[in-house]
Amino acid sequence: MDHDQPTVLLPGDVRMPLLGFGTWQATGQAGYDAVLAALDAGYRHIDTATMYGNEEEVGRAVKESGLRREDVFVTTKLPPERVGRERETIEASLRALGLEYVDLWLIHWPPSAPSDSIPMWRELLAARDENLTRAVGVSNYSTAQMDELIQATEENPAVNQIRWGPSLYDRQRHAEHRDRGIVLEGYSPFKTTDLSDPVLVRIAAAHDVSPAQVVLRWHIDHEIVVIPKSVTPDRIRANADVWDFSLTAEEMRDIDALGG
Image 1 (cartoon, rainbow, N blue to C red):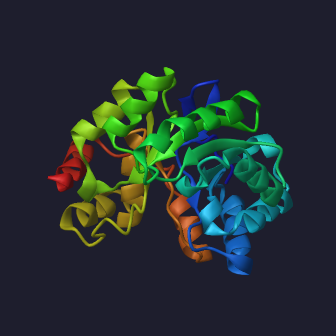
Image 2: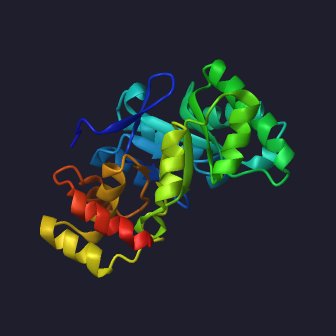
């Protein structure tokens, strides 16, 4: 199952797998089991966050998977209320994960005081420069909020992780990320999508896959990173099984149009 998975290139020659495994609400033993099942199913990218309270379980699963550290891409996120305590937060994350570095560290959402955003971003850049993380980015940021960071530091976020899916498709927002060299990473791909939509059902039938697999493939074919989450082993495996088909240009356009 260990495909040579498609990746997207981040600054610093960091390769980020387009398919990742989301762990929000996957805590304790169930979280550990889910991450281990995901790695076993072929995922090579795990997404966690300080606020998820599961970094320890994620780290244990990565370690016990038997995979080499460099073969698993690990993301964690900084809660914005930790402004001024960024360094101690990533050190705590690394301790919990049992790792010397993460591959990607994100500001989880814009801080409530907008003036805190740039100082936080500078601290992420410092952590990257000290090799505590290989790449840095943001989550839930608007284009204007990202531009503010870029203007202040001349350093673009590598990634912006936002809610995304066919019904949220926004061509302009997609282009704004591309124009800035910022990778768009989508979360909640199924929560934001009607999987019984006739367009998805028709395309799924044409490829003999499920509508959920079509949604994941749509992200991948757009070079948008996607992080489905599940704690059900069958669903975890099905979500990882999206490499044996791809969507036609026409099918992509039909799905894009769901964002109407």
